[in-house]
Image 1: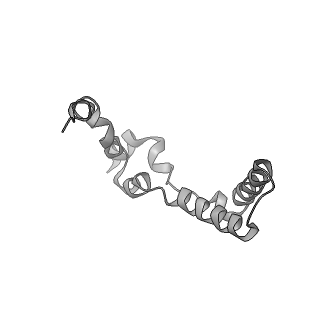
Image 2 (image 1 turned 30 degrees about the vertical axis):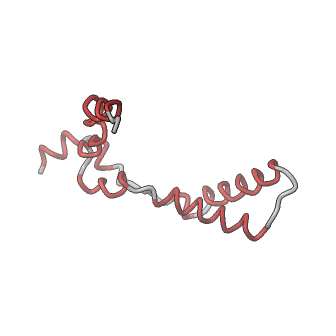
Length: 97
């Protein structure tokens, strides 16, 4: 197997995959997952199935844009995904702990 390129990438950039450890531990689960994005994609997929076929790409894009605007304007779109207070000044929080 010719995995020399892959081995070089892991050796040179392996540390980048662990950068989430620099964040507070209560953020790790949210950083490692993409659930909010998956939920938006599921919602758009559901809406496009209801419509069936689109006359052109522009109308499909308009449906997606309308759904994303709706999500952004509702309570679900304003929900915080990370507790930003823990990121504002982590040096002072570690000293206080």
